[in-house]
Image 1: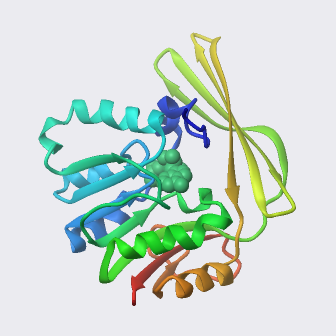
Image 2: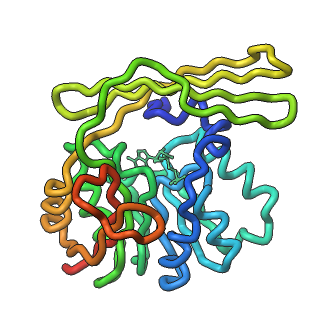
Length: 245
Ligand SMILES: C[S@@+](CC[C@H](N)C(=O)[O-])C[C@H]1O[C@@H](n2cnc3c(N)ncnc32)[C@H](O)[C@@H]1O
């Protein structure tokens, strides 16, 4: 049975809305490393453009719906077959026979429950070469609870897609997230999806502690994907960590 952790119902809409401009950021690391392990690779939003630029990418993705979207895209990109490997797996338990010079977690770390973070980072550490890099982003600090509200509208020909979000923080710093999607064709509502998921809010200090506990040292911290240094008060943190043991 597939456990829906938040990506099973709306994977076909993921690329429409998730248009973060971070490909050049990840390419800088991909180019340096040559081969990347991309964990929580989703629809291949990062892996495919990197592979097109010559980087080899091994992808781990637990969601069948996201893997399906990824595989559909790969069907039209036969030239990338020697550059991309897509594997079903979870950050905490995947096992590969090789070690990598770099690992990416883009938009995935927030989904790892607190109780699985140490084992997940240990598993990543096992799959990195000594002094290999772990690059990941994480939301830090609190978040205001909000009822379901429209956050994005995307138009494509006759179609209009709307995305709504509602959030509620629980006492254990888990955030219940409800994403809702409406698809309109020529103004008529033709699809409505509600997709619950959860994320964990943490602090920068806790992330530092976790990394030290699991054999990493921190090389750089950014506040955005343009390599701007992280500033106190930023709610988004991108970490470049090195496997130190
Ligand atoms: C916001 S999406 C990011 C996808 C892609 N990395 C990107 O940047 O577009 C988060 C991804 O993390 C995956 N994910 C969630 N929990 C995970 C886990 N325990 N192990 C590995 N991936 C996980 C989800 O299935 C989803 O594809």
